[in-house]
Amino acid sequence: MPRLPSIAALRGALWITLIALLATGTALTVQYVQTVRLLDARAQASVDDEMAGLVERYQGDGPVAVAQAVSRAVGRPRVTDFIYLMTDVAGRPIAGNLAAWPGEIDRTGYRLFDTRIATTRGTTIERQVAARTVLLGDDYRLLVGSLSDDRRLLHDRYISALIWSLLATGAVGLLFGLWYSRRGLAFLDAASTAGDRFRAGHLDERLPVTGRGDEYDRLAATLNHGFAEIERLVDSLRTATDALAHDLKTPLTRIRSRIELATMQGDADGVSADIRDDLDALLRTIDDTLRLARAETTVTSEFAPVDLAAIVREAGELFDPVADDRGITFTVTVTPAIISGVRSLLAQLVANLIDNALKYTPTDGLVTVSLSQESDGIRLRVADTGPGIPVDQRERVLTRFVRLDTSRQTDGSGLGLSIAQVAARVHGARILLEDNRPGLIVTVHFPGADVA
Picture (cartoon, rainbow, N blue to C red):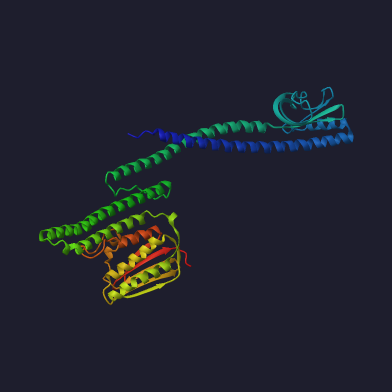
């Protein structure tokens, strides 16, 4: 059974129909008014020309010549063109094809009126006339007019066309409005259904995109991006929860075991250093988690001009002793650059990338840091000669609490690259992981950044 239109669809259809009717009526009315003005102007111009000729004849030859000219004009087969009437001061006709002086005209000037005019066959017919009247001296009046039946015919046709056009426009507008409203409501139904399924746990639910590129497709794409981001965050939260539970459970279990062992052996002082190390690891994990949370809540209103080159140089000076202790060759090359951002967050990004590179680079290895200006923006590169990251794991290591050491025996919380990824995203940058053969190259691209 076909679905009946809803109240919302009917309301939308009626609004569209009303707008279409107003547009159609306005267009026809404007066209009618312009046409009437054109016809009136042409009729008045022709009447004025004819009147001017008769007035000139009166001024040159007198009233008798005017009466003769009017009689000759009436005698010609031009009944559909001009109307004439010359009377004396008492209103008695002298010449012309009007039966009597029109009662609508009581003074000189240009007027429109309906009257009966005489034909050459001795009959009279009712016509609409646009006429001008003048006084010929003190004894005569002269009326010269032109038939304006076209104006009346135009009015009748305008009314007919307006009625039929409004009926056709109303029918088409109502059908189109119903279709368009139903289409919009169908999209809302699809969005509501997708939202309900998404809330029910189907995080892969998406709205269909027709490919038309209209506003519904744009809205569907926006909602789909939102669904995808929520799915990414939920998956990240699941991964983070599992990893965090493992990271916290291991040191806490060791602490508990050492305390129990020290209690049984009566040697509490001997395990204090190990317990302190485990607690420090826990605090570092918590600090990194809080740092990541703060990075994700950063807004652009906090941005200010930041000297990225100075940050890279300061990080190089900070990590240079660490590289010397590990026997790693460490070089830093910078190009002056100013970008808009949060200095503390950018400093954390640079520090995490360098720390990660030094951590996995063996003795006698090489770590290079470069900040360069390129045609498409600024690029920060950190390259090392460590073990690198497999291609299929490069996207995964940017997720929080993910470490390639599945035994989780190495130091760290698995949040270093995650914090760098969030910091880059907040600043509109992109992190790219590439093979250094051997080792890894981490590139942070700031597109369109200003360069000093």
